[in-house]
Length: 136
Image (cartoon, rainbow, N blue to C red; front, side, top):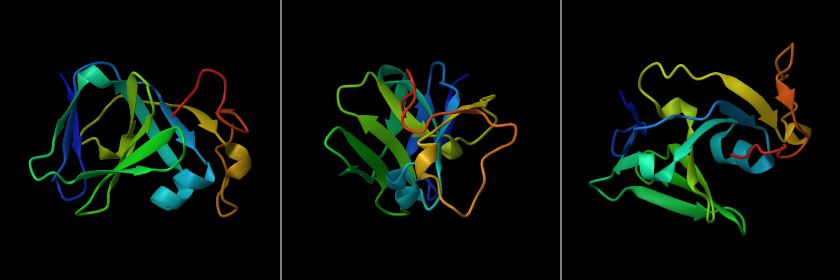
């Protein structure tokens, strides 16, 4: 059964017909600015992600030389992160409607975390930057 989700207003729908990667929390400055907190994200192979965007609401913001971020132009929901040339699409875990069975696996860019929150104890695997073989 596919995992389904949407932006806050429902204008952009997503259906993933395949496995989702475990959740990774990113504490980098860009993710915190983009969402107002850290990002909790999963990922799936692009060919297994089906988008529904009948009103052409999905917009992409080039946030670095190598990546862009997708969001809804009507409600402002942060939805996706995409590294140029990647075979996977990173999807913010909070957009899914029902239980996903996902678990958080790691924290990345912990050196950039906000001073207003503490990390989980006992901690998950933590990387000061992106981590080994871990990407949003």
